[in-house]
Image (cartoon, rainbow, N blue to C red; front, side, top):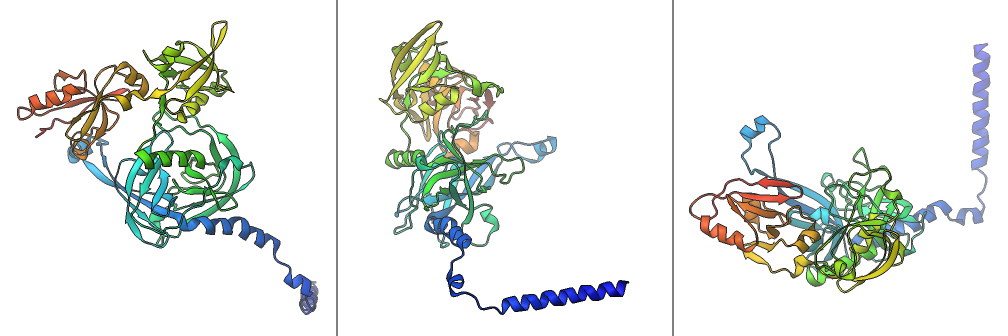
Amino acid sequence: MRKSQVRKSQVRKYEYWLLGSWFLALPISPALAQRPDPIGGQRRTVIGTAAARVAPAVVNVNVIKRERTAPRDIFEQMMVPRGYEQVVEGLGTGFLVSSDGLIITNQHVTAGADTIVVTLRDGRDFPARLLGEDDRTDIAVLKIDATALPVAPIGRSHSLQIGDWLVAIGNPYGFLLGNTEPSVTAGVVSALDRDILPGADQASIYVDMIQTDAAINPGNSGGPLCNADGEVIGVNTFIFTQSGGSVGLGFAIPIERAMKVARAIEASGHVRRGWVGIEVASQASASATWRHQRGVTIARIAPGGPGERAGVHAGDLVESINGGPARNFLAWEKAMLDLAPADTLRLTLKRGDDARSVTVTAADLPSVTAERVNVRDLSMITVTAAIQAERRLLYPRGALVLDAGASWQQALGIQPGDVILQINNYSIGDAGQVGQVIDYLRGKTGMRFFLARGDQVIATDMVAIP
C-alpha cells in the first residue's frame, strides 16, 4: 500500500515537471516581453524618485552637550561630586535650504549644545553655527561655511490630502552606522491639522501637524518629510510610542511654518512674536473632556496690556478667534503662535448673557522691550507684572535670566528662564540688584543663589565668584 502511494506521488511530480518544462519552452510574446512592470515602475516613481531628489540635501546633525548629574542614591552622593557634569552626545537630522549652508532642524536636537558638527551625505564634516532656536515651534537654524551645496526642494503642505504618499528621510541610530547615507521610509498621510495636547514641561506648541505612518525613529528628528514629487512638506519631529520605536504614529511640522521661522531667525536670530496680555485657562489636568469644550475662558489679564486696553476681562469666554470657532485652548495657542506685533486679533466674547466683539492689537513682548542688565555674561531683566504674565512666572519679583554664559551654567547651574530671587540673605527685587550684591560679597564670602525654575525654588552650590 505504501509503495503504491509512493510510486503515484513520484509519477505526479514527474508529470508536473514535464508540464513546467513544456511551458517554459513556449516562445514569449514580444508585446509581453516589452511591457513594463506596473508595480515596480510605480514604486520607483513614487518613492525612489522622490527620495533621490531630496536625499542629497539631507545632513546628519551631531551634537555634544554637558548635563549636570544629580546623585541617584546615597552611594552616588558619596562618590559623585556636587555639580558634576557628563558629556552627552546626541544625533538628529537636518536639511539644506540654501546652497551656502543654511540648515533647518528641530530645536530639541540642538537644545543645550556646546558643539554641533554637520555631516553631509558625501561624508564631509563641517562645524555648524547655531543661528537661532525657537522653542515654541521646535525649529532651529544652523549655518555651515560651504558653497554649491544641494538644496531640498520646498513644497506646500496645504496641498496634501489624506492617503497621499509620503517619504521620510533621516538618520535613525546613525551613530551605529558606518556610512552617512540617509535612510528612507515610506507611508501615507494619515491625518492633517493635528493639534497635540502639550505635556507638563513642554515649551513647544504642536498644532496643524501632519500625521504619517512612515517609520520615524530616534535620529530622524529634524529630517524632511516629502511628498510624491520629491518636495519637502514637513519637518519630522516626534512619534507616539510605548516601545521607543515607530508604531506608525509620526508627526511633522508643516513646512510653511518651519520656513517662516527659519527666515525670521536668519534675519534677526529670533522670532518676533506679538503679545496681547491675555492668559487663557489651559487643560492642566488632562481630563477626558478638554477637547469637547466650547469656548476658551480668560484666566488673567496683564495690567496695562493690549487685552485690557481692548476691554477684555478675566472670566470672559472666547467663542471665536478671527472668525473661527474657539473649541478649546489649543485654538488660542494656534492663534498666538503665528501672531506678530501690530497684527490684530478679532475675538467674539461672551460675558454672562452678553456677547460682544473686540479687536486686540498685538504689541511686542515685554521681555523684548525691557531694559537688559548685564553682569559679565549674565543677561537679565527685572520681573514686572507684564513680564510675569508673558512668561507665566510664579513670583512677581526678581531678575529673569535671558542669557547665561558657560561659567554661570557650569559653576551654578543658572539657565535662561530662571528667576534670581535671592543671593545669600539678600532679596533680589530687580535685575540691577544682582550686580550690586555680587560686588558687595565678592572677596568676602561664597555666594549661593536661590532660583525660581517653573514651580520650584532651587538653591545652588556655595561658590566664590572672583
